[in-house]
Length: 273
Image 1 (cartoon, rainbow, N blue to C red):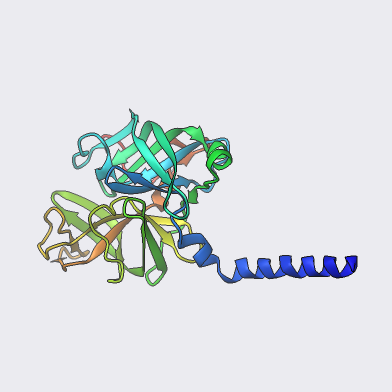
Image 2 (image 1 turned 135 degrees about the vertical axis):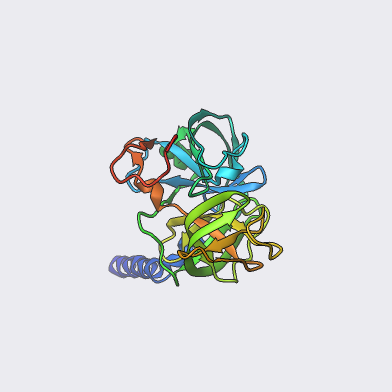
C-alpha cells in the first residue's frame, strides 16, 4: 500500500509538472497579479533580469502618468522625490497592498514614454507579505507576430492580440517615440490603459508599456498618434494602438536596481542629451 501511495504521489507531481510546461502562457499572462492601478493609469511591479530579492522593488508605467507636469520634449527627470501611491493587485484583480514610491528613478517622454519608480520595499518583503512576485523585463527586442497581452490594472482587464509591426516613429502632439510596438486590432486599448505592461504571451515577460491609440482618425494630435516611416511619409489610422519598448531599460540598470545612464550600451535618453 505504501509503495502504491508513493507511485501515486510521483505520478501526481509528474502530471502537475507536465501541466505547467504545457500551459506556460496562461499561467504567465492571463491574470492580473503584479499589475497596479496608478490613479487612472495602469502599471506593473517589475524586476530587471539581474534584480535580486533584496533589491528595492520597481513600478513601471508611462511618463505621461507621472504625477508632476509632463516632461517636455527632450526633458529627462532622474531621482525625483515622490510619494506616489500604487494599488497593487492580486491575480483576481483585488487589492493586495497599497504601496508608496520612495522616488521616481527615471521619467521621460522623449524617444519613449517611461516612468520608473522605486519603492521603499524589497521584492522579498512583497512576496512574504502579499505573495506577489514582479514581472521580469525582457532583454529582447520583441518581434512582429509575437502573441502579447496588455494587462490593465486600472480597468482590471487583459487584452489579447499580437505585435503587428514595429513602427519607425510615432508622433503625437509634439512628442516622438521610436521603434514602437503597433498591435493587431484585437487589442482595443483606450483611456485608463496607459502604462499597462505589454507581456509576451509565451514567457510572461514585459516587452513594452501600453502608450497610446488613435481615437478619431486625426493625424499627430493628442490622442491621435500618427506614424512616420524612414522616408518621412506620415500615416494615421483610427483605432490603431501602440506601446513603447522596455528592453532599453535592461541596458541602463546597474546592480541594486540603480539607473546608470552612462553605462556602455545604455539606450535610454540622458538629461541634456
